[in-house]
Image (cartoon, rainbow, N blue to C red; front, side, top):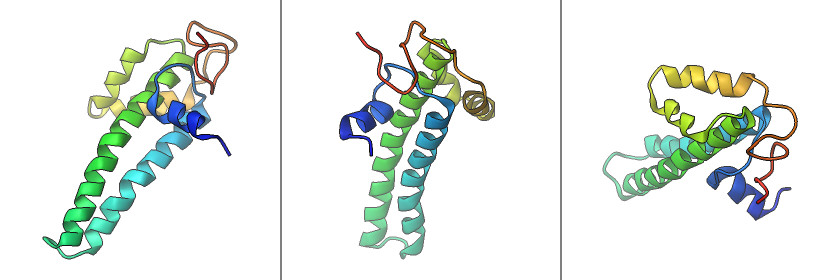
Length: 125
């Protein structure tokens, strides 16, 4: 089991590189975390206190997942030896689907590059 600092790096920091598998699985976990409160929201009566609670939890999960998706994409782009700013393309409708597929399917650069020596670890300073 990875320790807390590894998970913090994976989901909230933009340094280093991640592999296709780490990007996909991390994105899947983020999507599940985002979907759970939305699912719970649909099960409770509209306008109730519980409905308000689940909508707030969904909002917090959405904001956290937004940053996590950006951080994962930046590190995946780094593995392809591309600048992280290109992650902004994930906000363009339709193009974002193609960009996601590219990030999931194209292999990273073998060996060290300017963003780190290996995949799935923070950049060493």
